[in-house]
Length: 330
Image (tube, rainbow, N blue to C red):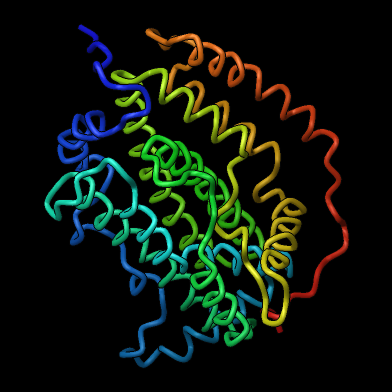
């Protein structure tokens, strides 16, 4: 028997988030793995305790030499994005209408999610350092700027908009890391391919979790969730590294060049954006949601027509062919 929408005031989220808390606690084990069973960065990196340490680094650097310039640039952008984790954790703890009890479902989820995500930046950062191709000081300046500058992703402190954003964003990072893995393997860097592959797998699990939160919210507050989804798509889902900059350059300048490189390589494109939107519409069964009010129905109509509109725009996009010279790369 399907649960009925909760009788809550329009725009209120508190009762819905209280309803979701037990679900988060119960389902956490499905979407997050026990610490002792997870991969760690040390599983993939040269071990300084072994006699073969310097030989392993030489092998890593030889493979890294074969990576195309644009691919290295995309890898750096992905790494800086992963390393800006303090921004994302603080953002998630500021979500309104959730219980801030340290043992409650929301705070336990945020901490466990952060702990898993933290491994991604650690692994990629160390790979970049060992590769010998990166000006690490320039990389670290960009990272410090990105954390200092924060971000504005259009969600405010609204849990529904936050869950829509994280559902979309985790799917996007899965695509990006998966494609970098494939291109790295093609270039002969099997180690980097493995690294990006396991990171992509984590992102896919996390995406399923956030999508499940929205699915549950749709059951009890369909119109408000639909309006939140519509609002986020009207604003457009921006990447968390949209303010990425290099030393001495304007805010967001490096992100534009990073994005161009990603599109030239087809690591993440406008078509991928549309495909992710289609996946969310299908996952959340947007065409079948019942109990919508008039605004909710209009929002549904907008969302159902949006993929075709975006595809027409994507077909007209021009990607700069000229390669940009980043300060990050020797």
